[in-house]
Image (tube, rainbow, N blue to C red; front, side, top):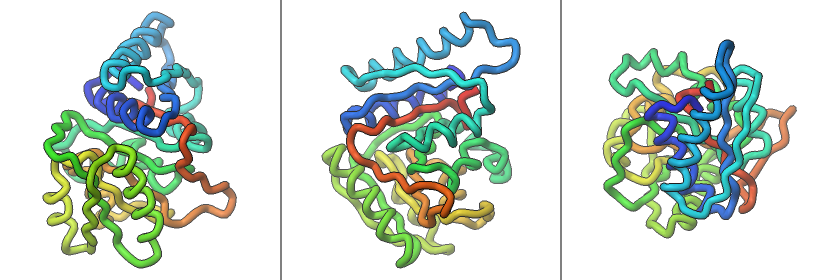
Length: 235
C-alpha cells in the first residue's frame, strides 16, 4: 500500500470483495527505510478512507510489515481469501510487468490474486472466466462462480488458448473481473495470465492451478480476510 492511484483503485476493489465475502479487509503496508510514522499513517488513512467510501460498513484492519513487499504479501496470502494488488504503467512495454511484485506473487501466493490497474472503468456487471485446459477448469470456474454469485452478476465462460487470448481480453474489457488460471513456475511471455495482467482490461483474478506440496491449499471460505496492497507491493 503506497498511496498511489493504482493502490487506491486496488483498495476499492478489495473493499467491495471483502464486504461481499462478509470478511475483514486487511490493508498491508511494508515500511521503507527512512519512512516516518506520519508518512506511514497517512498512506494507511487514505487507503482506509477509500475502502470505507467504496464499501460502507466493511471491517478494516491496518497492518504494517518490516519485510520486503514480496515477503509480506506471500506471508499474508497464507491466511487470506484473496490477495489484491495494484499495478500501474499500462502503456509500458510487456517486459515491464515482469519486474513487478504483482507478477512475482502469481503462482506462489496461497490464495487467488487479483491484480487491478489504475484507472479501471467498470462498464459491465459481469464476471468472465477463461479456463485454458481440463486440469485448471475446476479451480478457475469455482472461483469465478463464487465471485459472480457474491456480486449477484452473470458469469460468462470464455475458453482461452494462445491465439485466442486477445479476443478474450477484448470481451472482458470493463467487466467486474476476469478469472484465469496459472500453474507454478516461471512466467512465460505468451502466458495468458501474464498477458492479461499486463493489459489489464479489468481486474484480473489469477488462481493457482497446481499446489506446491510444501504449502497448505487455501479455499475462499467466507470470513477469511481479503488483503489489499499497493502498486505491485505494499511499499
